[in-house]
Image (cartoon, rainbow over all chains, first blue to last red; front, side, top):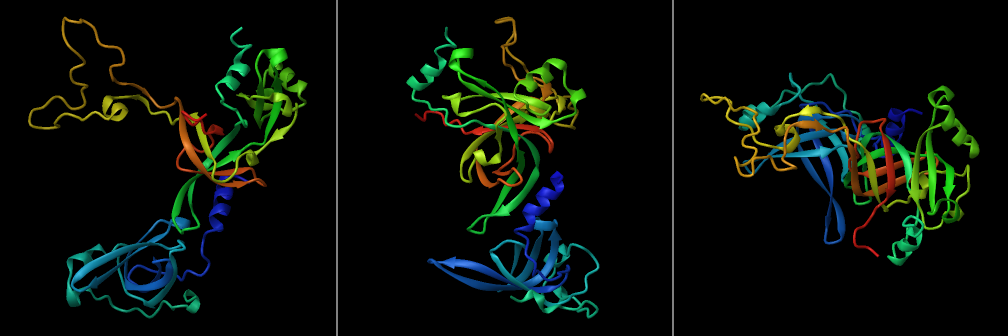
Length: 126
Length: 229
Protein backbone atom coordinates (compact mmCIF):
# COMPACT_ATOMS: atom_id res chain seq x y z
CA UNK A 1 0.00 0.00 0.00
CA UNK A 2 1.53 3.30 -0.96
CA UNK A 3 1.34 6.58 0.92
CA UNK A 4 -1.52 7.95 -1.15
CA UNK A 5 -3.69 4.88 -0.55
CA UNK A 6 -3.03 4.92 3.19
CA UNK A 7 -4.02 8.57 3.46
CA UNK A 8 -7.16 8.02 1.35
CA UNK A 9 -8.20 5.10 3.56
CA UNK A 10 -7.79 7.22 6.70
CA UNK A 11 -9.91 9.96 5.14
CA UNK A 12 -12.51 7.42 4.01
CA UNK A 13 -13.49 6.79 7.64
CA UNK A 14 -14.57 10.42 7.96
CA UNK A 15 -16.08 11.06 4.55
CA UNK A 16 -19.88 11.16 4.44
CA UNK A 17 -21.59 9.01 1.87
CA UNK A 18 -24.89 10.89 1.82
CA UNK A 19 -23.74 14.32 0.65
CA UNK A 20 -25.84 15.31 -2.38
CA UNK A 21 -24.28 16.57 -5.57
CA UNK A 22 -23.94 20.32 -5.17
CA UNK A 23 -23.16 22.84 -7.90
CA UNK A 24 -22.24 26.50 -7.68
CA UNK A 25 -25.42 28.55 -7.97
CA UNK A 26 -27.63 26.06 -6.14
CA UNK A 27 -29.82 27.09 -3.26
CA UNK A 28 -29.13 24.74 -0.35
CA UNK A 29 -30.41 24.23 3.16
CA UNK A 30 -27.66 23.23 5.56
CA UNK A 31 -28.50 21.77 8.96
CA UNK A 32 -25.88 23.00 11.41
CA UNK A 33 -25.41 21.23 14.73
CA UNK A 34 -25.37 23.77 17.56
CA UNK A 35 -24.65 23.01 21.20
CA UNK A 36 -26.49 25.38 23.52
CA UNK A 37 -26.33 24.89 27.25
CA UNK A 38 -25.43 21.24 26.98
CA UNK A 39 -28.23 20.59 24.50
CA UNK A 40 -27.67 19.87 20.87
CA UNK A 41 -30.01 20.98 18.12
CA UNK A 42 -29.91 21.37 14.37
CA UNK A 43 -30.31 24.87 13.00
CA UNK A 44 -31.11 25.27 9.32
CA UNK A 45 -29.25 27.82 7.21
CA UNK A 46 -30.44 28.47 3.69
CA UNK A 47 -28.68 30.35 0.93
CA UNK A 48 -26.94 30.30 -2.42
CA UNK A 49 -23.71 28.38 -3.00
CA UNK A 50 -21.36 31.03 -4.36
CA UNK A 51 -18.12 29.03 -4.20
CA UNK A 52 -16.83 25.50 -3.76
CA UNK A 53 -13.27 24.82 -2.69
CA UNK A 54 -10.98 21.81 -2.35
CA UNK A 55 -11.94 18.19 -2.76
CA UNK A 56 -12.11 14.99 -0.78
CA UNK A 57 -12.33 15.45 2.95
CA UNK A 58 -11.41 19.15 2.74
CA UNK A 59 -14.28 20.08 0.45
CA UNK A 60 -16.08 23.26 1.46
CA UNK A 61 -18.97 25.31 0.16
CA UNK A 62 -19.57 29.02 0.73
CA UNK A 63 -23.25 29.75 1.26
CA UNK A 64 -24.48 33.34 0.98
CA UNK A 65 -27.76 34.78 2.06
CA UNK A 66 -29.00 38.26 2.75
CA UNK A 67 -30.42 38.45 6.24
CA UNK A 68 -32.15 41.65 7.39
CA UNK A 69 -30.36 43.61 4.70
CA UNK A 70 -26.97 42.27 5.72
CA UNK A 71 -25.12 39.79 3.54
CA UNK A 72 -24.02 36.68 5.45
CA UNK A 73 -21.58 34.15 4.06
CA UNK A 74 -20.79 30.93 5.84
CA UNK A 75 -18.22 28.36 4.82
CA UNK A 76 -19.15 24.76 5.55
CA UNK A 77 -16.78 21.83 5.60
CA UNK A 78 -19.03 19.35 3.83
CA UNK A 79 -17.79 16.24 5.66
CA UNK A 80 -17.65 17.79 9.13
CA UNK A 81 -19.89 16.25 11.80
CA UNK A 82 -21.14 19.78 12.60
CA UNK A 83 -22.93 19.77 9.27
CA UNK A 84 -25.85 17.50 10.09
CA UNK A 85 -27.49 17.48 6.66
CA UNK A 86 -27.56 19.29 3.38
CA UNK A 87 -30.52 19.58 1.06
CA UNK A 88 -30.49 21.09 -2.40
CA UNK A 89 -33.62 23.23 -2.66
CA UNK A 90 -33.17 24.64 -6.16
CA UNK A 91 -30.67 24.32 -8.99
CA UNK A 92 -29.42 27.69 -10.21
CA UNK A 93 -27.85 28.61 -13.50
CA UNK A 94 -24.36 30.07 -13.13
CA UNK A 95 -21.80 30.63 -15.86
CA UNK A 96 -18.79 30.86 -13.60
CA UNK A 97 -17.24 28.85 -10.77
CA UNK A 98 -17.18 31.64 -8.20
CA UNK A 99 -20.19 33.92 -7.86
CA UNK A 100 -18.43 36.67 -5.94
CA UNK A 101 -20.12 39.24 -8.16
CA UNK A 102 -23.32 38.60 -6.19
CA UNK A 103 -21.75 40.47 -3.27
CA UNK A 104 -21.95 43.72 -5.21
CA UNK A 105 -25.60 43.27 -6.08
CA UNK A 106 -28.74 43.89 -4.08
CA UNK A 107 -32.35 42.87 -4.35
CA UNK A 108 -33.66 41.44 -7.57
CA UNK A 109 -30.23 41.49 -9.24
CA UNK A 110 -29.03 38.71 -6.95
CA UNK A 111 -31.48 36.20 -8.41
CA UNK A 112 -30.18 33.29 -10.42
CA UNK A 113 -32.17 31.62 -13.15
CA UNK A 114 -33.37 28.16 -12.22
CA UNK A 115 -32.15 25.25 -14.28
CA UNK A 116 -34.04 22.01 -14.64
CA UNK A 117 -31.56 19.71 -16.36
CA UNK A 118 -29.85 18.69 -13.13
CA UNK A 119 -32.04 16.39 -11.04
CA UNK A 120 -32.21 16.87 -7.28
CA UNK A 121 -31.74 13.45 -5.75
CA UNK A 122 -33.49 12.63 -2.53
CA UNK A 123 -30.45 11.07 -0.83
CA UNK A 124 -29.42 14.38 0.70
CA UNK A 125 -31.99 14.10 3.46
CA UNK A 126 -31.13 12.11 6.54
CA UNK B 1 34.31 7.05 33.47
CA UNK B 2 31.69 9.62 32.83
CA UNK B 3 29.89 7.31 30.44
CA UNK B 4 30.04 4.48 32.93
CA UNK B 5 28.12 6.53 35.45
CA UNK B 6 25.53 7.83 33.07
CA UNK B 7 22.79 5.30 33.74
CA UNK B 8 23.22 5.82 37.47
CA UNK B 9 23.26 9.56 37.00
CA UNK B 10 19.99 9.51 35.10
CA UNK B 11 18.39 7.65 37.97
CA UNK B 12 19.80 10.17 40.47
CA UNK B 13 18.15 12.98 38.54
CA UNK B 14 14.93 11.04 38.76
CA UNK B 15 14.58 11.08 35.01
CA UNK B 16 13.18 7.77 33.93
CA UNK B 17 13.67 6.92 30.30
CA UNK B 18 10.53 4.90 29.99
CA UNK B 19 10.22 3.85 26.40
CA UNK B 20 12.22 3.98 23.21
CA UNK B 21 11.38 6.01 20.19
CA UNK B 22 10.87 4.68 16.70
CA UNK B 23 11.91 5.47 13.14
CA UNK B 24 9.36 6.19 10.47
CA UNK B 25 8.54 7.75 7.14
CA UNK B 26 6.42 10.82 6.58
CA UNK B 27 3.54 9.89 4.29
CA UNK B 28 1.71 13.20 4.04
CA UNK B 29 -0.90 15.35 5.69
CA UNK B 30 -4.67 15.31 5.87
CA UNK B 31 -7.34 16.19 8.38
CA UNK B 32 -9.61 14.10 10.57
CA UNK B 33 -12.49 14.99 12.86
CA UNK B 34 -12.28 14.57 16.63
CA UNK B 35 -15.11 13.63 18.99
CA UNK B 36 -16.25 17.25 19.29
CA UNK B 37 -16.50 17.54 15.53
CA UNK B 38 -13.45 19.75 15.14
CA UNK B 39 -11.24 19.27 12.10
CA UNK B 40 -7.75 18.29 13.28
CA UNK B 41 -4.79 18.68 10.90
CA UNK B 42 -2.70 15.52 11.08
CA UNK B 43 0.49 14.15 9.60
CA UNK B 44 0.36 10.50 8.61
CA UNK B 45 3.53 8.67 9.58
CA UNK B 46 4.53 5.14 8.69
CA UNK B 47 6.15 4.19 12.01
CA UNK B 48 8.22 1.06 11.96
CA UNK B 49 8.40 -1.87 12.01
CA UNK B 50 11.83 -1.43 13.55
CA UNK B 51 14.13 -4.33 14.42
CA UNK B 52 16.35 -4.32 17.52
CA UNK B 53 19.81 -4.67 15.98
CA UNK B 54 21.93 -4.17 19.09
CA UNK B 55 21.35 -4.09 22.83
CA UNK B 56 23.92 -2.09 24.80
CA UNK B 57 24.32 -2.84 28.49
CA UNK B 58 26.15 -1.31 31.41
CA UNK B 59 28.60 -4.22 31.50
CA UNK B 60 29.59 -4.29 27.84
CA UNK B 61 29.24 -0.68 26.76
CA UNK B 62 29.16 1.36 29.96
CA UNK B 63 25.61 2.57 29.31
CA UNK B 64 22.23 1.13 28.44
CA UNK B 65 20.73 1.62 25.00
CA UNK B 66 18.89 -0.12 22.21
CA UNK B 67 19.76 0.21 18.56
CA UNK B 68 16.87 0.05 16.13
CA UNK B 69 17.01 -0.50 12.40
CA UNK B 70 14.46 0.66 9.87
CA UNK B 71 13.67 0.43 6.17
CA UNK B 72 14.53 -2.74 4.34
CA UNK B 73 16.75 -2.28 1.29
CA UNK B 74 18.59 -4.41 -1.27
CA UNK B 75 21.81 -6.02 -0.15
CA UNK B 76 23.88 -3.99 -2.59
CA UNK B 77 22.78 -0.78 -0.90
CA UNK B 78 24.76 -1.64 2.23
CA UNK B 79 28.47 -2.08 2.85
CA UNK B 80 30.00 -5.32 4.07
CA UNK B 81 30.61 -4.00 7.60
CA UNK B 82 26.98 -2.91 7.80
CA UNK B 83 25.78 -6.31 6.61
CA UNK B 84 28.05 -8.00 9.12
CA UNK B 85 26.63 -5.90 11.94
CA UNK B 86 23.05 -6.72 10.91
CA UNK B 87 23.90 -10.42 10.63
CA UNK B 88 24.55 -10.57 14.38
CA UNK B 89 20.89 -9.85 15.10
CA UNK B 90 19.70 -11.81 12.05
CA UNK B 91 17.88 -8.68 10.96
CA UNK B 92 16.97 -8.00 7.32
CA UNK B 93 19.05 -5.49 5.35
CA UNK B 94 18.18 -2.21 7.01
CA UNK B 95 19.24 1.22 5.85
CA UNK B 96 18.84 3.33 8.96
CA UNK B 97 20.17 2.53 12.43
CA UNK B 98 19.40 4.69 15.43
CA UNK B 99 20.25 4.30 19.09
CA UNK B 100 17.86 5.11 21.96
CA UNK B 101 18.95 5.50 25.56
CA UNK B 102 16.96 3.40 28.04
CA UNK B 103 17.26 2.85 31.79
CA UNK B 104 17.15 -0.89 31.51
CA UNK B 105 17.98 -2.52 28.23
CA UNK B 106 17.51 -6.08 29.53
CA UNK B 107 13.84 -6.06 28.51
CA UNK B 108 14.88 -5.89 24.86
CA UNK B 109 16.28 -8.75 22.86
CA UNK B 110 18.07 -8.93 19.53
CA UNK B 111 15.82 -9.30 16.51
CA UNK B 112 12.74 -8.11 18.40
CA UNK B 113 10.36 -5.97 16.33
CA UNK B 114 8.97 -2.66 17.57
CA UNK B 115 6.14 -0.96 15.75
CA UNK B 116 3.75 1.97 15.93
CA UNK B 117 1.96 0.51 18.97
CA UNK B 118 4.79 1.63 21.29
CA UNK B 119 2.81 4.88 21.27
CA UNK B 120 -0.77 5.42 22.30
CA UNK B 121 -3.38 7.97 21.31
CA UNK B 122 -3.17 11.18 23.34
CA UNK B 123 0.53 10.81 24.07
CA UNK B 124 2.89 13.71 23.32
CA UNK B 125 5.83 13.01 21.00
CA UNK B 126 8.83 14.85 19.60
CA UNK B 127 9.38 14.32 15.89
CA UNK B 128 12.76 15.03 14.27
CA UNK B 129 13.66 14.98 10.64
CA UNK B 130 15.41 16.90 7.92
CA UNK B 131 13.65 20.09 6.89
CA UNK B 132 12.98 20.93 3.24
CA UNK B 133 16.11 22.50 1.72
CA UNK B 134 15.67 26.05 0.45
CA UNK B 135 19.24 26.53 -0.78
CA UNK B 136 21.26 29.70 -0.24
CA UNK B 137 18.62 32.19 0.85
CA UNK B 138 18.67 35.89 1.56
CA UNK B 139 17.66 37.61 4.75
CA UNK B 140 14.05 38.19 3.70
CA UNK B 141 13.38 34.47 3.38
CA UNK B 142 15.81 33.21 6.00
CA UNK B 143 15.37 35.67 8.87
CA UNK B 144 12.14 37.49 8.00
CA UNK B 145 13.85 40.83 7.36
CA UNK B 146 11.86 43.61 5.70
CA UNK B 147 12.88 44.68 2.27
CA UNK B 148 13.68 48.19 1.10
CA UNK B 149 11.44 50.28 -1.17
CA UNK B 150 11.28 48.91 -4.71
CA UNK B 151 10.79 52.35 -6.35
CA UNK B 152 11.31 56.10 -5.76
CA UNK B 153 14.99 55.85 -6.74
CA UNK B 154 15.78 53.28 -4.10
CA UNK B 155 18.53 50.82 -4.91
CA UNK B 156 18.12 48.98 -1.62
CA UNK B 157 15.74 46.18 -2.53
CA UNK B 158 16.80 43.08 -0.62
CA UNK B 159 20.05 44.20 1.03
CA UNK B 160 20.78 43.22 4.64
CA UNK B 161 21.31 46.83 5.83
CA UNK B 162 23.92 47.68 8.42
CA UNK B 163 25.65 44.66 9.89
CA UNK B 164 27.17 46.42 12.89
CA UNK B 165 29.25 49.33 14.27
CA UNK B 166 32.45 50.71 12.68
CA UNK B 167 36.08 50.78 13.82
CA UNK B 168 35.08 49.81 17.34
CA UNK B 169 34.81 46.81 17.55
CA UNK B 170 36.06 46.51 13.97
CA UNK B 171 34.41 43.16 13.43
CA UNK B 172 31.01 41.67 12.89
CA UNK B 173 29.51 40.09 15.97
CA UNK B 174 29.16 36.32 15.86
CA UNK B 175 25.64 35.15 15.22
CA UNK B 176 24.77 38.13 12.99
CA UNK B 177 21.84 37.16 10.80
CA UNK B 178 22.98 36.95 7.22
CA UNK B 179 22.21 35.14 4.00
CA UNK B 180 23.12 31.46 3.83
CA UNK B 181 21.85 27.90 3.61
CA UNK B 182 18.24 27.61 4.66
CA UNK B 183 16.60 24.31 5.43
CA UNK B 184 18.05 20.83 4.83
CA UNK B 185 18.93 20.80 8.52
CA UNK B 186 17.82 18.55 11.34
CA UNK B 187 14.69 20.01 12.94
CA UNK B 188 12.71 18.73 15.90
CA UNK B 189 9.07 19.60 16.35
CA UNK B 190 8.21 19.09 19.99
CA UNK B 191 5.14 18.03 21.91
CA UNK B 192 2.90 16.88 19.08
CA UNK B 193 -0.14 14.93 20.20
CA UNK B 194 -0.70 11.45 18.82
CA UNK B 195 -4.24 11.44 17.44
CA UNK B 196 -4.50 7.81 16.41
CA UNK B 197 -2.39 4.67 16.31
CA UNK B 198 -3.09 2.02 13.70
CA UNK B 199 -1.21 -1.00 14.98
CA UNK B 200 -2.25 -3.14 12.02
CA UNK B 201 -0.67 -0.99 9.33
CA UNK B 202 1.88 0.67 11.64
CA UNK B 203 0.53 4.12 10.93
CA UNK B 204 0.64 7.03 13.36
CA UNK B 205 -1.50 10.13 13.09
CA UNK B 206 0.22 13.08 14.73
CA UNK B 207 -1.43 16.47 15.18
CA UNK B 208 0.36 19.19 13.25
CA UNK B 209 3.21 19.37 10.78
CA UNK B 210 6.55 17.58 10.88
CA UNK B 211 9.82 18.40 9.07
CA UNK B 212 10.54 17.33 5.51
CA UNK B 213 8.61 16.18 2.50
CA UNK B 214 6.58 12.98 2.20
CA UNK B 215 9.01 10.09 2.12
CA UNK B 216 11.39 11.72 4.58
CA UNK B 217 12.90 9.73 7.45
CA UNK B 218 11.54 10.71 10.85
CA UNK B 219 12.62 9.95 14.37
CA UNK B 220 9.65 9.81 16.75
CA UNK B 221 10.36 9.81 20.48
CA UNK B 222 8.16 10.35 23.53
CA UNK B 223 8.10 14.06 24.34
CA UNK B 224 10.93 15.43 26.43
CA UNK B 225 9.13 17.64 28.93
CA UNK B 226 11.57 20.18 30.34
CA UNK B 227 11.48 20.48 34.12
CA UNK B 228 9.50 17.29 34.58
CA UNK B 229 10.90 14.92 37.19
